[in-house]
Image (cartoon, rainbow, N blue to C red; front, side):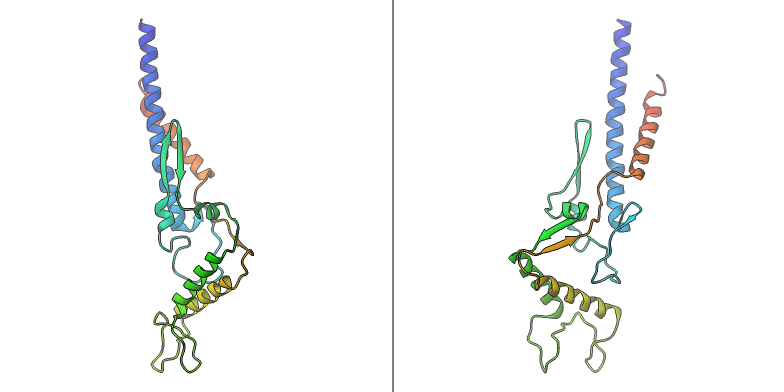
Length: 201
């Protein structure tokens, strides 16, 4: 009887250890993955910069914040699962190629017109909208913001002109996955929790 009690008590401690460790790892991994968006890197592996606005101050992959906010984690048995409902999350995390569709071309034209303006230009001038900064004479300033907007407009126009069926290469900008820093954190959590739970055993 005494032996059975010891075994049951040990089983309780093991379950307590597993539950606590999984919970702590879930919290730590979630924070580490979220920080990847802040540092624009998969831990210490920097993401590829945008071709059209390398000097832009906006963070990569956080234009609307939708991707970053969409990532959720849940515990399934003794596993932690990270997932998102956004269809484009996987291509950014793993990289790859996408095929240009009619809908994509329409989206790129829409983005282009949002930058340059949809009104017909006057006197042969380009239809730059109010987002661009001008000097007192009404001419565009040669500054960082205008150069960034111009480069973005050129990028979206180039994308919109791509033929349907052509390929666009999406660089890998991983934000979720295994990494030595994550493994080190997991081992540290496991060790601390083992001391905490089994210290009196």
